[in-house]
Length: 478
Image (cartoon, rainbow, N blue to C red; front, side):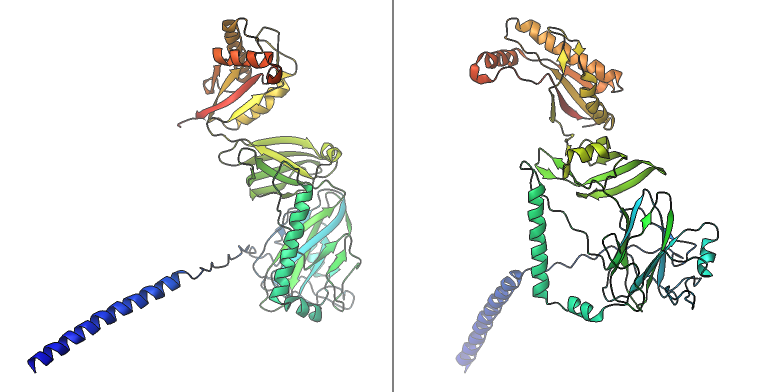
């Protein structure tokens, strides 16, 4: 009995050990299997713009900038403190009342045809809009008393059958359509991208749900009609307009709105390119338009501009300023007429790195023969570099001078190349660059000998066209 008892205890111990081992093995297998499952990332939630308080009243409209989308917004909520829009027998083609409204205001910068693009967050929402021209003092009272008539009306009902067909489209068909759209966009980008640049992939604008466009045919859409777009109206520079946008849907969602003036304009794709990295980069971009009645107008103010179409109007001048950490800022002034004459579909701005060792060879400089005196159009050649270094006072650089020599008197050539570098440095100092930021150097003895040998060799290609070189030596504190 004693032996049998010990045998049973030993048997149970072995069973427990092997059972635990089996559990651990199974557990290990399960863990391994679990770890191979792909992780699903949560979809990125869009950032919504909160509509300002009281913007559902005419007295507190939201100011819109031309060609700049506003939104997506949160949902308009209610008609505000004042019910400005109320239809009557004499004015049937306005809202019977405001449901969930928001008021916008804008000033026309130049003559053309007004275009309004409205993209709804939910296609099932029933958005309507009216456009009023500002009549001056007490405008909101005149609207409330129906003493001013809207210049544009879009109150069409939702086409439920078409909406159901659009919204209930199968996921497979939607994915196929999206893939085809991306393929078409890439093909178009490749066709318009120069051979020495990577293909451009721009994000197309969302298709408007309702709006006003120059190529539409309906002059007005009343509540008894179905449709999306009404025809543009002519507008002139300096005129001020109001838009009241109303969502009839209870517990509806928001929207994005963009106002433009249609004209024959130059609309290239603007990109910023890192030549060393051979890639496009996003920048903090500001573009000012000059020449309109309002003087100077901001048309782009984007902290993360990733490339896209920008509209330039004939007869106007523009100032462009772009910056990004690690690169020299870009500052350009240009006239749209000159851009249109060139006809380029892409405006490419090269971004130069501020890192130590970055070089800028200068070709179009001339000196008196055998001397260090600058001659010719050297001001225009060097002025771009002045603007570049003024915007980055933390960057220090070296000016290196060059000579074209057969090496007859190497010592003299070394001194001449150094004197030419000093001449360029003095020019920079006269134009506001701190002398402590600039160092100078000439060609070494070996460099002069190699350059002379290359010039004498028929296969060497002759003298280099580089007359000087700017080399980044570092930044203050680094």
